[in-house]
Image 1 (cartoon, rainbow, N blue to C red):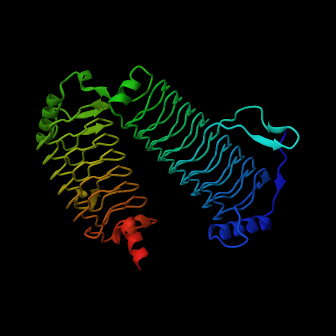
Image 2: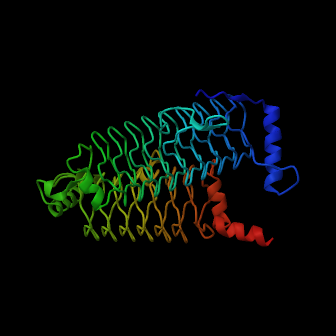
Image 3: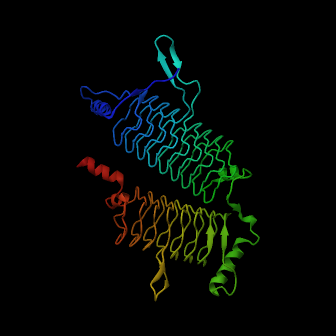
Length: 457
């Protein structure tokens, strides 16, 4: 049975939205939007409140739904191809069987959204319940833009997501069973405790992706690029022999033991390169190495695993630790001037009283190099009295970090997240605040504290 959709214009749509507003306020004349099997192709729904709407089987092709409230809405088997859903709220929405091919869902809120397979049925007075489409339809988000989308605990079972852009998407606890993510981009995505059973991640880009606690039964990883991915023991076992690229190797693979390499590097630093050899490693599991007080200035340790490593009091000027896993590492009192920690995983790390200021390269021409922590994750890290003057903190995530007495004077923080951070004692003179509302929230305390003050006023 073919479905015939009813065309609706913008004036009618506004009436539906107004009725929904009255319904939400329990006023006379209010009712939930009933738009099942309607044709909203190309309509402007930007910013509209259609929460709880029934849009089952509706067509929203190329519709402008950016910033719209579609929370709790039924979009069962809806056609959302090329729709603009940027920053829309789709929390707990029913998207089973929906087609989102080429849609823009960047920044969308999709907490607990249901994106499993679905089959469109319709009630007929003569024949009862009958199928509109014979096939069970998987959700399709191929080539869709879901960058920065919050898909916490979403059900995305059996979804076709070939070449989808999931850069920096949040997928904590999401059910991704049987999802087809071939050649998708999950750079910087968070998949903590996600279910990836029987998922196809062949050729997927997983640069800096957090994969701790994930389930891996039958997961395909042929050609998946794990450069800088954060893996736990279960994940490391899953990628062995699975054809994945850039997975960290054991320190046993080194031709020279790591302690000897460190000693050789220190000789290289001490003699200005006349003796020893610069330490340059990539993709090695070094574990909780004890490097207290050592001189690793200018060393290169990219895509390495140094969980719980102890660097306390070490000299780490101009060191490159990009894409490395350094959760719970101890950097207290370290000289880290001009250090590079781009896309490093630093959850729970301690930088108390560390120096991450810029370093002068040529006094005569005022040439200097700053510390770079762009897109690093400093979740619940300690940065008490840490100096980050002039540092590049573009897109850095300080969620729930302790920045008491930290100095961010002259730093660049565009796109940085300070959720749950109290910035009351932080020095921010000359800090670039371009398009960074989260920092302004932080000045007054945490978001939860702000809400409490607003409620009491």
